[in-house]
Image (cartoon, rainbow, N blue to C red):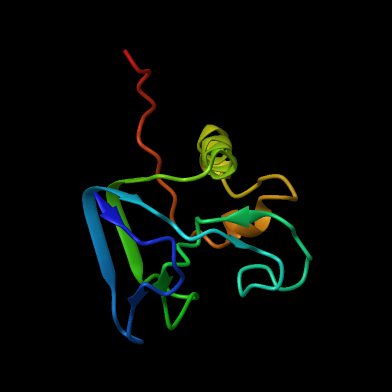
Length: 119
């Protein structure tokens, strides 16, 4: 388990820096409103989320710098439902609702694992 301390910019990445996380649980994510952020500067959305991983300060949010493999993010129910909805849409995962579209636009690659019902 790795905690980001519920703070923004906990991890600083350089211009050509990358962060690779695998086989872990990441919790204590920072939650921020999308309104006025670099993710959604124009729509005035009031959706708060932790999914842009605000805890990681990336120099460039236009090219991938954070790579997650087999990582569980402990997120709020609203973020979970947005991701579940995207996973259920399959190849059209970015075609979400008006509310979550800015959030999905910030994700470049989304490959959910096959859903396995809990025993």
